[in-house]
Length: 197
Image 1 (spheres, one colour):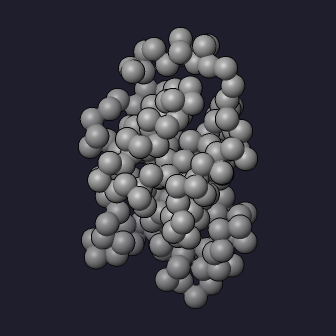
Image 2: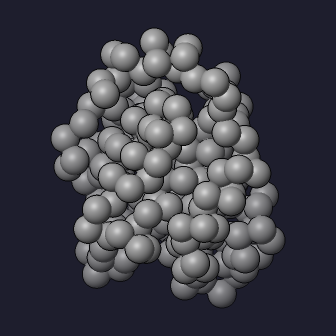
Image 3: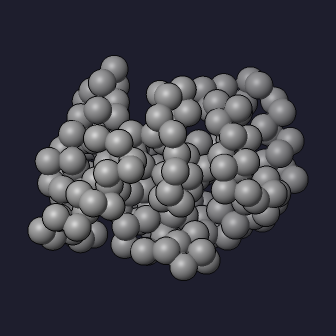
């Protein structure tokens, strides 16, 4: 399946999955609490960006929610398992976006859905990590502090910095603005995400 055929295939799609169905899929595939919270945090950031750029909020939310659904059980096959599952459900746009949310997989991000998922995934996880080492959590976190931590290779070392920079290039925003936007979403949803406020 190529990105060119997605719209054509979506026309044949009988029914889109809703948020409740997506959450059932997530909970059936993931049991790790931190991964579930990461999934919800990316979903909330995606939803808020969808509002900002006038895209489908449900589609953006569900894509963010399910992007790592197979990671816990099938880390070496990630994201192929969740991509196949969503493709079989007729969710072609969502499955394609998930298939290209890491640039090293070699798939081209074409739609806003594709681009914003890649741009929001790594940086959202990184910002959450930054908040967790602060006495006041996310409540007084600033982009300046996040940028400083980004330069420390030893902090959250598993986070691919190049992917973060590639992401902001894809969506054409300033990194500071992107970080501030995500921080605000995390603050608004701190209780849901179990973040210190």
